[in-house]
Image 1 (cartoon, one colour):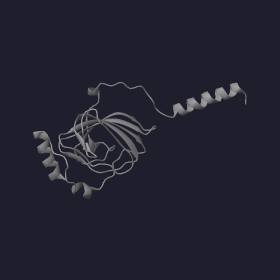
Image 2: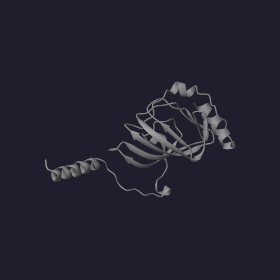
Image 3: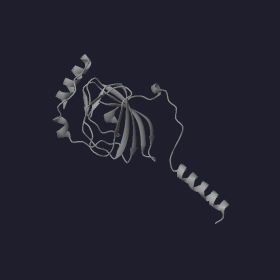
Image 4: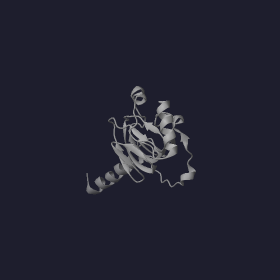
Length: 168
């Protein structure tokens, strides 16, 4: 094969690799995407109460970008999923792994058990999932028996923690 034929073949192979994904440029205002009830969306499979905004979902690539809103007192069960995720806290508090995370703080999780995550005063996060599936796999009995480790700092949070504790 000549050098020119190899260069042409390399370009064709590169273009074919790029074409397998439905990459499109996306620019959104936050208000353009409505919050959905998490239980109406099969992407997360978490206990009732979360809200989600799916900003981009590229099934070919196995990538989902979303915002997730957790109400005050919510506890996300210890879980695993067939993907990794990167999370940045946007508002509120996320308490996990012995850390009280605030806006700008970061979490990475993979297919091994991680959590539980507590949201004593509520929280909004930006999440990127990458992999085979975003569905959370968790043990309902273990979740029900969870003892909260973090105290709420707000009155709304104190009410939320008690409500979610009683509802588990």
